[in-house]
Image: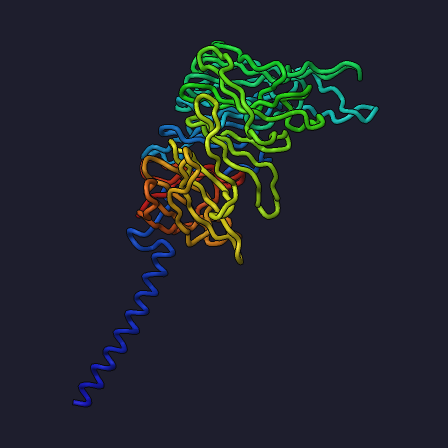
Length: 457
């Protein structure tokens, strides 16, 4: 009996050891993306990109085409089954011109880009900026059909100098192409001044044909900073109150304030123009970005510490009549909001707190009340999110020092329940991503693959 008992005991110990080894092996295989049902595998990648200077970069996925814009070219890639990222078309700006801007959305499958030549003149004999050569600057806007790269139309854009503008001077949506014309004129004498509010105007064209539709009735003391076409209105951020009202970098003694506005989509008539913050002005030192048009939501950053990533400000929401609604602070009990996406009356955000590294949460807010709806802690640092239908997809990294994506998480948008967890077998580039027919398509940086596709396994 004692021999049999010893054998049973030995077999039990061996079984436990094998079970532990099996569990560890299964965990390792799952974590590394080698178990069916737990994995993301790479299906294709475009050819490696040429090195770039980081200017005018953008990426979009519409239908079965992914498009990448850089300073030197705009390229379309096929992403339907069997195309595997094949290059379909490419536009190279003529001569020595560069791509100097693009609309961040490709409304109805039409992409707007602008190109031109940047002035190389830096200063004259007096040490003041020298006037650039005639015709230089971001002076041509071009519309592409994303499906085949066909050039639908092009129009000149008014420019005042050879400097390239910042982001936000083009938008596409709702059948409209919006263009900010830069109408500034440099004073020829110290006594001559610019016309208040005459610096940046806004015009709308038909998105498919380029036919002029209207020029917006911008208030006389205002200039256009950013616009976004909504379902019922064209929303805008204006800078109002000084000679350089449209110039966020101007130093005008604090008399210029950023405002929220809306224009009629059919005529360009001003519907309303209100302060972003009713308590204190939002100066041009602040960063104001339109996150959504339906509802109208602004991300307002009053100050930021680039080294730590910490910022002060809020997400500010407005009704269709311009009445402000409850705001959501950039920093709260949930942490510091890093990225956010608005879908309907919900805002989904990635927020972090710091304790021996960044620890992330996925938080859903009600935009009507500004209150949290649900809040989930993530096991890994988050790198980006996307909301599609009733699902929220989050890509995570192994650590905040990592440069590659290792994990995919999917949550129910309604209640935050975790629905899926997958691990990437091959590291994915850490960049903007899209969902297309069940695949995750990640946009790479210059010198990497323009797009890489992964699918569940």
